[in-house]
Length: 261
Image 1 (cartoon, rainbow, N blue to C red):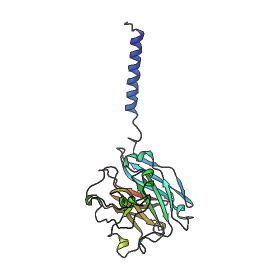
Image 2: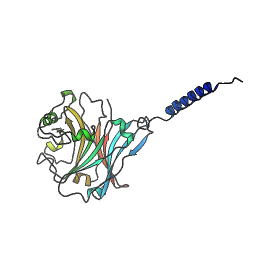
Image 3: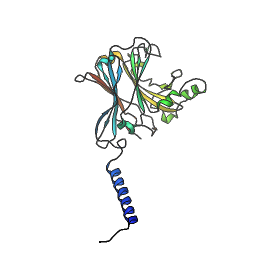
Image 4: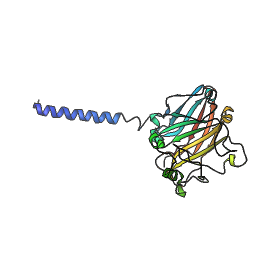
């Protein structure tokens, strides 16, 4: 049997340890990079007399196809009667591949502009692709107002959408709307989909739904209009929807058919 010197034994042990570590790294991939198929949830946050939490659905390849919010039916009761409220929600780590950073549920007891359109009690469900620090830097004052008003290149604007003046909001940016939506066609506002812009790029996507519409326990899915050129930084929903689950007494507000281009 060949005898190894202490130096040789030390070198061989070091190589063995390195090889074991590398194999372990291959066998145990980063959970944020790959997760098994299934549904994963973020932590709950109290809203009204209920709560909300985010969720993501991964397919068999570990890719996200649905991102959303689960809102308990009790959350529709006990809401503030005055003053807008923002409820920030964290995403599960399995949603990292979507490019979304965090979500907020914004309650508007008296709605907001434009009058006669969005002035009903409703929720804004913001899915942000920028982080909180970047959001806080949006002041829409002075030079920042011009950044908020900056329109994207035409190919990056979703088909049929426009960016009206006066829709700039601190910590959000400007809101692009679809003039072809029902609420602009002499039909009551129940739900709609908005793209948020800042400095010429999309910073959030936003389903909006009235309190009355949610209370009707709907089950609908609506296509989302796309731009000609997509930002590769996040996954675009090809549809959005809401459905009520009687068994759990909660709503799912969903970004559906996520595609990262």
